[in-house]
Length: 462
Image (cartoon, rainbow, N blue to C red; front, top):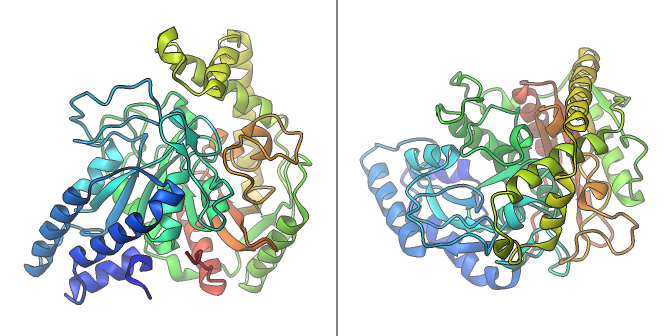
């Protein structure tokens, strides 16, 4: 296997045996960035000097048998929504000045720095992560490695592209409405939004309790290894779950025999493109072949799109209130318009959405009394043309309209993963989404690992 495409777990094992150096792994990732970032636009910032210096420090630790963690020396990227000491965090926006001290790491970044991960740079995002594709006034258009004419999805599009192309082994994304799972689905990698509160976050997202920080990787094991680090304590997040020291790699190979799985070909009667529907249905049969008890069933969640939009638009309004008219003229007009729409939401309407969200959570809790997992499409369509907010062939008006299967589980705070489940006739990935009961992150990871072992997925040949 080419070094740049090696899993983080394999890299770390070879580091420990002194059969591979973190410097070699970092150089391989940097070479991939140099070769492909100009065309795909996955990174806004690459710190070659800093990455190599960190890799040399890791190399010395391994030589002494003093590795800091399971991810020590592993090349890693950070989405440009997450504060990173010494690097600008511009959030895809021209409205923010890079001329600031940048003295603080976000919790996830801090945990990885303490663990010895090698930071390569920062990956692209739409402005403040507001939409399901990745382009911004600051960084331009990020492109899908399976077909550069297509979008990688968003908002963690740069991270997904980096993962799929070997520009690092571990990647931090964020997910407020599908922003890990959408690009992971479009780019054919593994993405995991763990239960809300499992990974501390700071400063608080403008989208509040919808927002998660999580893993984007080429393998389930790597994501489990990354989550084990990210779930460490950080008291800057007053809403975070108490850390319990769980090693999420343990039990990954336990299989899914006997698990009760509900397969939902769709939710709320949303249309799924035929090729995607066929691939996801075949994946559900694959779960049955692995011993799961699979039956077709779907939860009833009401008008969850309207509920999500209330929270999302209100969050955008809160965000936009921090900027002057002059700054807004530099920003994505779609984000500004979303904030303007959010400012019109009344307090009674907002609290009605709160009550509806609570009802959704209760409905899913009752659903999971019968089923251990819900399996459904990650997205109803494959990647479409880059530079667009919505597919040209659809009448859908906003990104929320073509992502109807991801954001419900931000509202309910449940763990949800996407695993690649095949390619369309045009050679574009489709994703199977696996959703677990609240706080049962390990079962989602175990099921994803079982599917991966039985149905290994390809990476783009670039």
